[in-house]
Length: 433
Image (tube, helix red, strand yellow):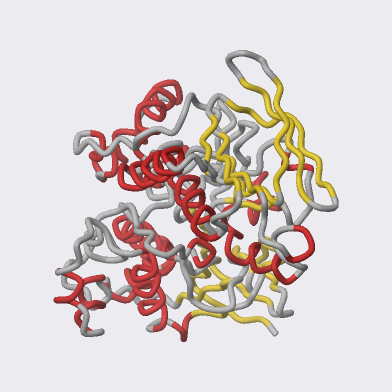
């Protein structure tokens, strides 16, 4: 069975959800449908840690920057669920992550008619309809075929698994995107530690906000375990939250970044990096430092942060994981043994470097139909359309995957989500109506 659409979106996380809202609210008469691999609406479900919050202002939600009057705003979600006053009285700078996840699921529930959940895309090809017009043919794990005049890929970025962990296949080594399910799996297999006991030692790799949150969660979850965080930089770093740096999440900066040369983009990336990567908010850093201080005061330190460390070897044993670690400044070699290892190592951007991916995974089979610049980066237009080599190629947009071309505002956060959705929606209207 083949289903036909004007627009087919792959993925229905916040990026494509914002697009679905924009298409509805802007009044574009475009039939759109979405395919989502997850069994239902969710957001960061593997990282719903107690007490954890989001890192963006709550008004930078799915809609407000584009349409402050939208019924799908976070404020209206609170109002319709009878929690607006309680939330305004909450002594927190940012909302709880679990509440924002409920908001995303609440909005997604209004668009269930447009989404097939639990469906994995198995192939993307280009064909022609009965009138000879080019279109995309998408096959799925459900045995269905979808054809569309335009494709929007909004699957989120691929987890980055660095060496030597990329050669490991074990439930004892996992990326943060699998954190809570992986812990449950270990317990079902007989416990996170040997023979059903609590773990004696666990290791977190990375220096990001997530790495700090995971370290704290593991310390509270397994209070008798040794929790070690290994960081390549000297130690954990404070996130740059200067209001001047935060203007990198303004649409004007996106336009400015897009026009810059690749060499200047690299300079801008280096400056903006600490606003989002390899750094953490002050509240979690203070909590972690206080915890370590108190443990030292009690003469029973269980949590450690080891900087200037690079994992060189990893060996999965029957009862745990052995890591060979280099101290980068002295060259000394250490061995760490853990019951399991959590990789808070980030995600892969689109690009030619070893830590990047040439194109999003779903584009692999059709990548040669698109242009790349002299540096090996996929050419993407200001409206987030991948630039084809032929004018006969149907339109393909990347929603939330364009940090290498559009800068830090496209880094997977909510900051410019609604404005990007508006840009893509307007381009779809021009192309298809």
